[in-house]
Every structure is written in structure tokens, then in C-alpha cells.
Image (cartoon, rainbow, N blue to C red; front, side, top):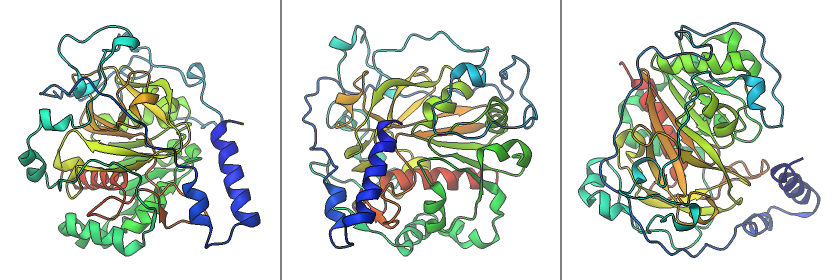
Length: 395
């Protein structure tokens, strides 16, 4: 049993056996770590580049990807990590030497060991994007986070109010949307359907073993919750889905369990682990598709042992948000919170942390990291924007 499982068992047991509703908020806050001090010495360079893979990409077998991939029965989802050999790593695995800084954080002339790698600077975005870039993307300028926010009870109407304000035309058509257009694969830790319901977005939730049988022919957005344990046939089907134009959202442990194997050579887990606390978050790529209707600085709830990201293809992978507090726990000193990349005709978004509130199940509306101005979590708004973009694509 890993530390994430042990921690959650103790939390739930404590809440159920001795804590009343009036003291529970205090007990949850005691698990937040003090904000890490951080000295910085480098900044982002300009000009993150994007590049699409061919519309038809090699499959795991080396053959051309086709609709839905190979058929077959799925292995039952378990709490253990997936052995890469068991799911069959793609034969197209690239031998890529990680750069010293990742994604659009690459700095000219930077190289060397972990000891002399420069780290991100607190206000890095001031050197890479002017204030009007945020305004043009519909992002409100907020001050850098200096202390932990107060957790808040955030009701459904706040989520739907934010969605209606930022995507008014989309919100008007939600009632007529086919639920199969958004498919969520159940996870052991993240529960994206909770947030999707609060937003009022129709969706279909399936088990990991149902993906091969249900198919994704009519699906536009696929959400793979942490821990993302899927078999090889499912991974091939997901790869084909993105190649055809689908939008894929993955969270937390899905990075190592399925994302690096489905799209080898793009991103990977660099063996760094977070603490289960709230960290600062800073938007470093102000693009409307991801951050429209959000803020430039907020907080971001991480789970126990969330996996830190290493970018292997910096000319393709976009670094979207970073954290000063997470950087000291990251072997690459990047503190990356979210990345995105194009593949074939589709796109992939991966977030460190969860789409759900990430609170104890007995407090489903408790949000540890409400963002200023918007009220919901920045990570939740980012994921919601991505879902909306996927649903509106081609309309």
C-alpha cells in the first residue's frame, strides 16, 4: 500500500470516527505544508513553438493507426502501477536526452547536471509575455500567490455561472449535447465526473475495461482520471482517437501509467513527487483556448505524490503553468503544473493534480484552492476550457 492510500485511509477514518462538521475544515488544513522559500536564477525564453504530428501516426505495432485500434478484452483496473512491459511500450519509442529546461522554458545555452540547472524565476512571465497578451486571451491579471488560500464551499451555481459567462453560446446548447461526446474513464483517485456535473456538461462515465467495447467514434473529448491504468488495446484506441482529432485530458498518475506509453517521446514522469498540499500557480502561456476567463496567478491543489513532469519534445510540448513551490520537489527544478501538445489532428492536455475538487469524499463541495475573481479552481477552469474547445472543434 503506497503513502497516498495510507494517508487517505487515515483521513477518512479520522473524519468518520471523531470529527464533527464544525472541526473538519481545520483538520483538512493541517495537512497543507508551509510555502517553500525559493531563490530563482533563470527565466523563460521567448517563442514556444508548436508542431503537429502527421495526421496518420505509427501505432504500437509500427503499422498505421486506424479507427479504434485492435479489439480485445481489457485487464481489470487495479491500484498498482502498470508495468511498462505489460502494456507493451511502442516500438517507436524515441531515445531523447532531456533538455536542461523543458517546453517553452528552454533557455539558450543551458546545459549541465541537476546541480547547476537554473530554476524558474518567480515572475518569469513578465519577461516572456506582455500584460496585453493576458488581456487579449481574456485572462485577468492577479498578484502572485504569497500564502495559502482559505478553502471554501463552492456550490454548483458558481461553476455554471463561470461557464455561462466565459462560454455563453456553448452553455445555451448544453441541453442538446449528446453525452457520448464526452467520455470519462473512471479513476481510482480523480473523479472528473463530479466537476463535469457541476458545470452541467453532459458526459458518459465508463470503466477502464469498457473502452474497447464502447468505441470512440462519436466521442470528441476523452478524460482519463488518475491513476490511468489501462491495457495495451485501450492505449492504442486512445492514440487513434487523438490522431483523428479527439481531445484527450489526463490527470496526475496517468502521466506514467498511460500517457508516456501512448505518446512516447513527448513527456514523462521524472520520478519527482509532490506533497499533498496547495501550491502557487502561474500561467506562463496566455492562450484563450486554455485560460480564457481565468486569472494569471492562483493556487493549485496537488495530491499526495503527484508526479512531476519532464518534457522530452520541447519544440512541440507547450508548458502552460508552473509553480515556484513545486520546483524544489522537481528533479528538473521546473515545477510544471500543466502541459499540452498536438498529435495528428487532435490535442492532449495533462495536469499535475486533479480535475475534481480533491477533497475528502464527505466534503464534496469543499474546494481547497478557489482562484481569485473566478471562484472555482484554476486547474478546473483550465480543464473545462479544454473540454469546451474539444466539443466546439469542427462546429
